[in-house]
Image 1 (cartoon, rainbow, N blue to C red):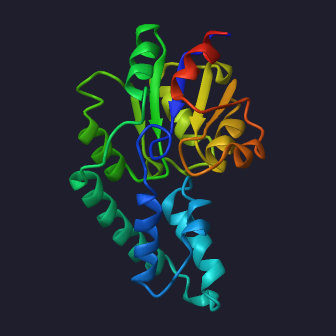
Image 2: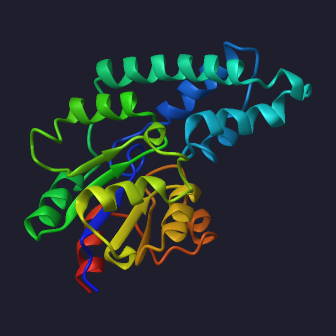
Length: 228
């Protein structure tokens, strides 16, 4: 069954990330009294960010009664503020090597290109606007984790793209990402290909733990995978 939609993650998969997302997450937590090691934050960066905050608080806040929706919301608000500023102003924001060429090649072959993310839609829009992916006609779908019932690893973001793109078979979809939660999202959706990339938070060995169908070092390798 031919692939009709390839769904990509953002930071670490298609957009260069010098640990900036984890640093902003760390800073937002510190401002509310929680010092969490960056390496612990890296492991949860693919999750919807309210959920990621709650995961960290359950480890670093001994009094669970303090973990309220208000606290999580305040930390998330600070994180969003820092991320939007970063993606609007940093000179280092760019697509990873071969990403735009791969998007263009997929679209020229009639394959839809989707972007989903653990970010809320406002951050995702900031990134896509900065890189001008819409103006370049490189993507068909963009879904933030706050636009569906639950973010990754649940399948709802991909299912939204399927509905919007008129795709009925999950075996016509490939999922591409750099973290555990990307791999789990692909599995939970039932994607034909679940492709881990080594350009982000996880090493090849770490990605192997989640048994993707493929692990690649260069995003352009996707073209050969879906062709076969």
